[in-house]
Length: 373
Image (cartoon, rainbow, N blue to C red):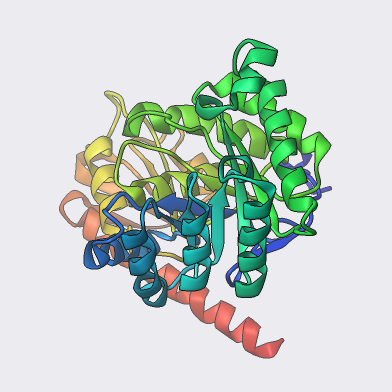
């Protein structure tokens, strides 16, 4: 229990699996995933997109493997990637065999969709031989016909039953290196399904609101759905599904984790919506600062407030703060204390330098602490 118990999140206990060299579940950090949207057979385009996602902070990246050309290209893609690659497999079990042999760290499959029990066993053997984990991906939009007939429509019980049926296929082959997702585009359906599944299994859970929408609407839906589950302590890895570039999914994923204090990366900006009291253009300033500070990976906080009503109070809680003053002269706070003033024309460049210096200071201190261990 912390000194601020209202911020405490008690995480659901789960067993841990490995996706390549990245731990998922147990006490491992909640990881952020995305998926490429290039033609996988276009190796250069796919690797270029993976590189942008890695720079944005992706821990794991999924690549679709719908045909033999894709799994052939996967071998080169896996070698070039700096993070584990998940092969997305639908229906054809041979693509799973090829992807495992090509070096995929994980296979995303629905065991019930790839054929007979013998074929499932063959995929499991390939996964074991190549050190692959698996993700069972249940989706409300592609539920089995018998479950739709049984329940009448996609519902939490149908998603969970589908997941348990798929789990049984893997467990019958003595395979337990798997995680599970029960995704839906309906936030209520997805959250309820994950809550039920969390009580029924001990495996890691992969969170997502599927087909969430565009950058704005999808971000809101994902923040509500994924954020609610994480707040309940449910979830070990997340993918924000947006009709946007995959690196944007990574950024939104980290923002969700940062807002809950689960995991921090880069600059957390606290800023006001602005009003007539503002001493500078808050909206434009925040936009520029977020862009110019996107290269910072070290966790730290920056408050950008337009006036002195809430500015000093917010600055006390952040590493660096700027509060609007009169006549284009603004107050700068360091570690919550008023330190100096800056003129309007110099403000953005000045704040960027302060943040970069603070990040370097934190990194140096962390290096010393690590060396002393």
